[in-house]
Length: 79
Image (tube, rainbow, N blue to C red; front, side, top):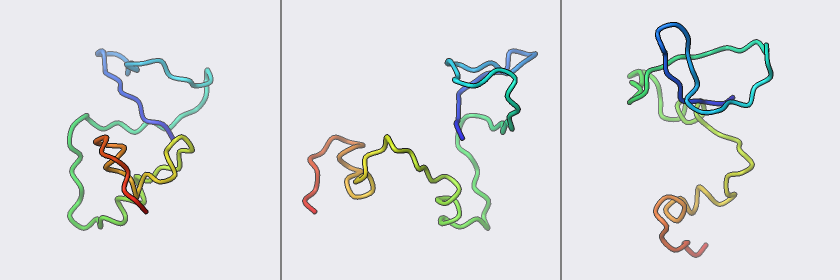
């Protein structure tokens, strides 16, 4: 699954950057306005994390332990 930024020009949804998709490929498009997404009150944090988890091989393997290093540039913690 990919997420892209786009805008509606009054007729069609237009991606804001190039998209690597095959022509005529059937897609499911989920539309949500940019901004803060309201989380339903009955939804748990764990279900939100599971729904938004990423298995991207380009992410550092120690991201969960060293997130301050990757977010803010602080020195890595000793493990």
